[in-house]
Length: 246
Image 1: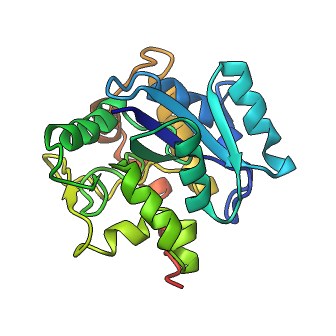
Image 2 (image 1 turned 45 degrees about the vertical axis):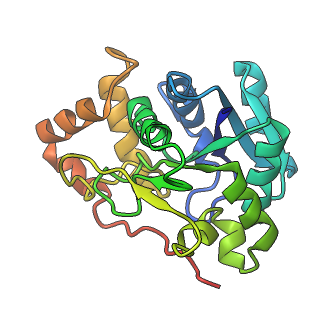
């Protein structure tokens, strides 16, 4: 079974345009993320799914410089972009990661992959974010290409086309859904980048950890925030952008 991580990435963002290529220590956030995803043992391939818009050419240029596979597709119909990318690279199992999670832990991605694989035939979709215990920014979804293809062909609502997996997890009578949880609830932490405040926190984390240990883990981040609890307040007031259920 060919297992492909597909990272959705674009320069357009209503809250923080160009965020995926914002730099910390002279390196774009997306490069940090791709460096980390390359260490996921369960995956056969990492593909960046960006858009066919001219403004996203810098993402393509980065992928070419790093030797990372990429696919260009529709901007608004992200579900189509995912499906076409998965089909292009022969994916049978897909892991969905968003580019606004630059410090995602490869061990966490592996854990979700392993749960899906260890329960082969039991689930169509597994996530560590449906019941949130991990910090936001560790979000990983793993699902079958078959489920993705059905969503691509049948989803009609705007939200279903924009957010890729809504069609799957909103039909529990049709798809078998599984969840992975952390041993403690750290859902209050926000390690994703959608605002300037989010970026400021991620910049602090990377600057503190990366130079000494480029392979820093989720646990390293938790220890750092325990040492500097005031950092949590930098973006504690930021609310996740709600899904418009249209």
